[in-house]
Length: 203
Image 1 (tube, rainbow, N blue to C red):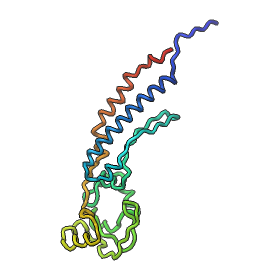
Image 2 (cartoon, one colour):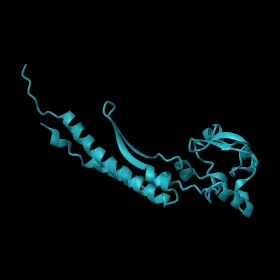
Image 3 (cartoon, rainbow, N blue to C red):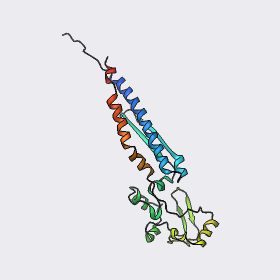
Image 4 (spheres, rainbow, N blue to C red):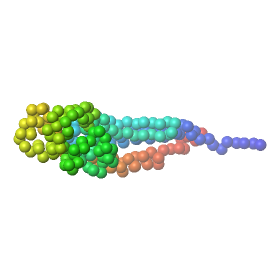
């Protein structure tokens, strides 16, 4: 029986080249979203700005390319979702936070306002162990106390920053960066698919 090859397709070569082009586009998109996220922070959280990073994670065996944007600073939680009486209760991680050792159970009496803790050690959002030495402010709404001169004097005496108990407005810097670039992301990815020349790998 006579067999004649009509054409051959270099599938491995096509996949490798397509993968390279897609990685480049995704990397550029990650950088664009990260720059947008940094602009959204707007200097309100310098630590968050400094910790923003973007990169690729190529899972070759699964044929997957993951574009990743993140912020490692512990303040990023507050920057995204706000804090105290201004925090966004739509935060998907809020329930876990409220059920963790980080949450101050005395806050329940003051809604979401920043509240003084009971006497003793506790773990802050920064992951460090702190100590409410006297517990004299336990259960007090610290956001309201900021309005009193004696309280501001006390804050200065113990070297707390002026905004220590100031509620933070949620910036949604990461969510908004992704949303504002959604069309760009889809257009760029579709462009790679639509313009890739599979014919170059016919041999």
